[in-house]
Length: 431
Image (cartoon, rainbow, N blue to C red):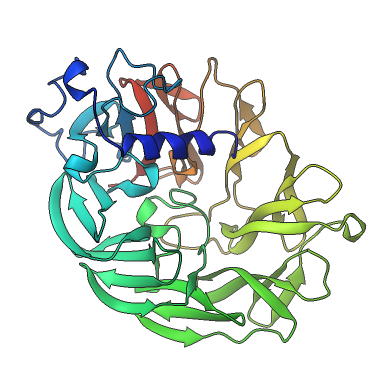
């Protein structure tokens, strides 16, 4: 995962510096950079569910001028770029990106929700939220948005202060709960992992009809927040660090490290506490552990760092290691969802899907099956993979959006070309 992210951060930072070549590089698709956007017609417009019997598939992408080699970044970030919203392979919205438009191409700063393209942008003093390019509201302070929900027309955001201290939970820009010393916990799998829509994933989510998230104060002292009300959570005396926490099907799950227990983490739920598998003599240290719904229970996804060897990616359950790979095989996305987006499976092993990027290509897997796409493709963010139930079926379908010299949408082996010169930044499946 780390092999591509530094490039993305550099690319995003450079792009924010401006579009100095805007006038020199028309996109050659519908209009030159900086001129009025192409009007939308028929069913292809934001918020309109596309025709067809299957679930709606929405893609967000970053587009560059046709003459620009965006993979090499030869212009060092001075090339113009746009955000594009696709319904399947059909383009439904195009937005110019850059500081003059208060729209960022950073994949963490835009998302498709309900068929609309929502963006956030931090000016020198404010945070700006837009839908389909139209400003909805702005508020004082520079926040990095970690959670984003749209509920009954209201926008719930969970933002970390870009200074690195504190967070705020807001509804339509108004603070509901803020903590200057609180640290947000990951809250489970990254966006698009394991649910039909992205809005149910990550630090901010809905459980039992309530908007939930978790944070930790120094101590460590974890809290569960439901509809803006924080509730302290009791921990074991030996708890040294809270790695993740999430309420799921009415049960509060937590991953933590404990003093004197080597570096192996514990999975805690209710009165149950299980130390996850690992070889103590190798002195592994768990890193970046997040909770993943799996077969009516929780699994843990993370890394073991070994002082005398390569890092190892693992997917743990209570009974042992479900999946592991030793670097340099890069595990970009491993998804292990429950049976449906709205209910938890009461039994069964669940389904595991993953995207791996070894040095010589890309491997997509679901359960015992694997596929190797032909061509030079990359999964640019974990939000470009989504495992969802088949409509009316008992199985699941794995959607993966890949970028490279061309872009494709891959769905259980069925490939659909996506007409864009750039990369796909996110994937949402649902109405």
